[in-house]
Length: 429
Image (tube, rainbow, N blue to C red; front, top):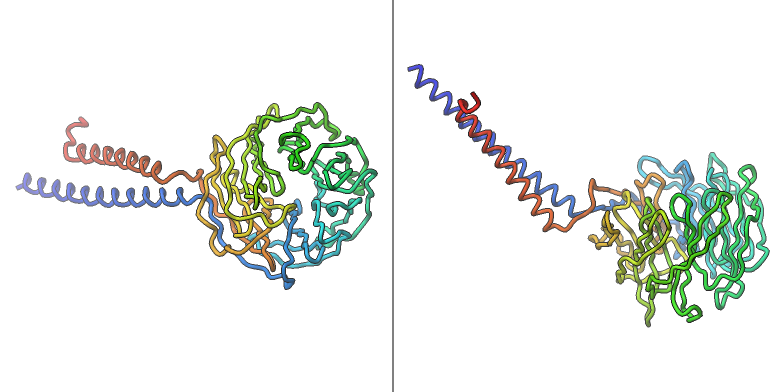
């Protein structure tokens, strides 16, 4: 009798174990499939709000976020004004605060919009203008007030970039053939006044400036649309302690065929440089180019080039940004924003599914300093997105299926071993 009762109890335990095992297998199978699906989707954007400025076709071309992440400064091309928005740090939503007109020709556009490191001063200059305008920033409201206009001692301005409170400005000796100077200024932290540190004469077709993360290397891109140089090339410099540049090297082996005319951005580790541009041809195709960088020497080598379906709408604009901890690249154009997965080892780019609710033309894009929210400029205002990141880079679905199968095989082996030991407890003795 005791033996029969023991056998029944053993059978019940065995049935319960089978039931639990089946449930566990089902749960793990669902988890594996769900995880594969989420990894395959990559970084996604969810729309938070669409802000209408009430000014038709007033495209924002340049943005900058305050160091404390509270304020967003945006230059509207049509009205030639800098708009100040306060950011909700939790939702990313924008609240218009104020705006100020800027002394530029709207038809020429803006060379750049830059903030000092402490966020107390904002610098702006129009393309082909001969002066840089300095604004003080109210720390409580973000409101701007014009302090001074610093006249260049040489020629009209083409491009400028600011890093570590050093302002680099390219001026054009002759706007028709893009020959000019590179000027280096230090910023006085107490009053924002510019002091010239260095001046280099007669740059050949210099149009774009880049400072690598960490501030160790300085780059000047020299596209050759008029055949002056014979090939597109990049000038590489070291940055010294006072911000001046030295030790010029020419990188001429990139085999670049595009005329670099739009957005660019480094990955946060400085190993990749991404550029959007108009390539040769009629009509000119839009290209997305990835350059690999040696962080030690600064040398660049050509990675991948991808033709983009959407045309660039503005030559001089913030048309590209790297987001989600270097996992994803976003560009904007005639069909709205496009996402690309970045390979963590090579930097190679893979197109991701289209961004939902964003099929209208856009000209520029910006990220907040936390990387959690993205701002995209369209014809009448700004779309605000929350960046939904992932734990790993997006991978091709077939690769994930292989790993999923291997995971399930391992799980089944473990469950089989557990079931065998449960049925044969004497094996543990």
